[in-house]
Length: 454
Ligand SMILES: Cc1cc2nc3c(=O)[nH]c(=O)nc-3n(C[C@H](O)[C@H](O)[C@H](O)COP(=O)(O)OP(=O)(O)OC[C@H]3O[C@@H](n4cnc5c(N)ncnc54)[C@H](O)[C@@H]3O)c2cc1C
Image 1 (cartoon, rainbow, N blue to C red):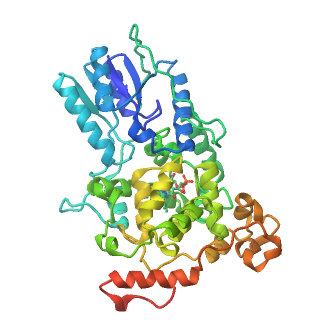
Image 2 (image 1 turned 120 degrees about the vertical axis):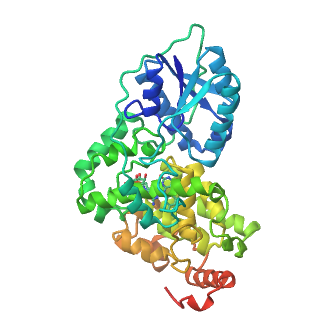
Image 3 (image 1 turned 60 degrees about the vertical axis):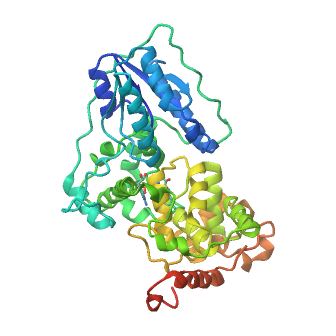
C-alpha cells in the first residue's frame, strides 16, 4: 500500500502519480490544508478547492483523509502511523512547492520511506525543453517550437484504484467555506464536460473570439487546469492542425513556458526578472494605498478596468484581455509595482497560478521574459471600445452604467446625467501615460529608442 498525496491534481483520470501508487497496491488518498497556502487564498479560491475536493472524495467512495498543518510534518507522521513505505505525488515545480517537497522527502528518507514523483501539471515538465547548449529559453516563440518538437505523452491510463481504509484512521472535516460566492461547476466531470462543450461551440472560432470579453470566446478551462481537474495532455490530444486549434495550443504553451521560466528563475515570483525595473520610481504612501484600494474594488472611473476588477471580485475570474488592461492600469497609470497587483490577483483568482500570474504581470509591466515593450501602454478607453464594442461586458459588471447605450459606456464622463452614481476618474490616463514614459526613460540606457507616442 502507499499514500497518494493530492495537491494540484484533483482528478482520477490521466493521473500518472495515482497510477504509480496503484502499482504499489491499495492507495490512501490524502490532502493537507497547508496554512501557508490557505491563509493567502480569498473566499472564491477557498470555496473552489473545498468543493472540488468534496467531489473528488465522492468519486473515491469517501476514502479521502484530510489533515491540517505543515505537510513537512503531517505527511511523514501519517506515513509512519499507517506504515506506508512510499508517498506518491505529481511533481510541483513552483518555488514554494518544490522546496516543501524536498523537505518532506528528507524527512521520509530519514525514516526509511520514499517520496516518489511521477508526472507534473504540464504536458512537458519544466526544465525538459532547453536550447542546444542546455540553457533555458528566455523568449516564448523559440520555446514554443522546441516544446512542439519535444512532444508529450498520450493521456495515461492509470487503471481502477483500490482504496485503502486503515482501521481507526479518521479524516478531519473539510474547512467550512462561504456558500455565497459564485462558482461555476467544479471538479473532474465538470472539466471534461466544459472541454467537450467548448470543442463543439467555441474552439473552432477561438482565433477570432479569444480577445472578446463580451462573448464566450475562450474555454474557461484555466481553473480546471490550475487544480488539475483535467490535464493539459488530455486537452492537447484533442487538437488538430487547423488555425484555431493551433492558436489554442499556443496558449497552452504559454502556461508551460511560464512554468519553465519560473522553474529556472524562482526569484521571479517576487522580483523583477529584468532587474533594472527595480530602480524605477514607484508610488508609495497613503495616496497610493487609496488608489490601490479603488483599483481592487473596481472604482477607478475607467469602465473597462472597473468591469474587470468587479468580475474578479464577484466571480474570481477575468478574461485575459481585461487582465492585461487592468494590470497595465495598475503599473502604468497608478505607477505601483506589479507585485501589489499580482498579490491581489493571486488572492482572488480561482485559477490563481504562481507561474502564469507572476509572469503575466511581468509581461505587462515590461520587466519579464519576452516582455511587451514598456512603452506599449494600454489605453483603457480604446481597449474597451475595441474589444467590448457594444459595451455589454461593462454593463454586465458595472450596474451604475446600465443606462448608457452601446459604446457610450466606455466614456461615461461624456454623459454625466446617465452616470451619476459612477465614480470620477482617479487619474488622467493621458497624463499618467507620459509620466510612465518619463519614469521609464530615467532607468533606460537607450533613451533615444523611446517613442514620443503610442
Ligand atoms: C496579469 C495576468 C495574470 C494572469 N494570471 C493567471 C493565473 O493566475 N492563472 C492562469 O491560469 N492564467 C493567468 N493568466 C493568463 C490568462 O489570462 C488566463 O489563463 C486565461 O484568461 C484563462 O481563461 P481561459 O481558460 O478561458 O483561457 P483560454 O483562452 O481558453 O486558454 C486556454 C488555456 O491556456 C492557458 N493560457 C491562456 N493564455 C495564457 C497566458 N497568457 N499565460 C498563461 N497561460 C495561458 C490557460 O491555462 C488557459 O486555460 C494571466 C494573464 C495576465 C495578463
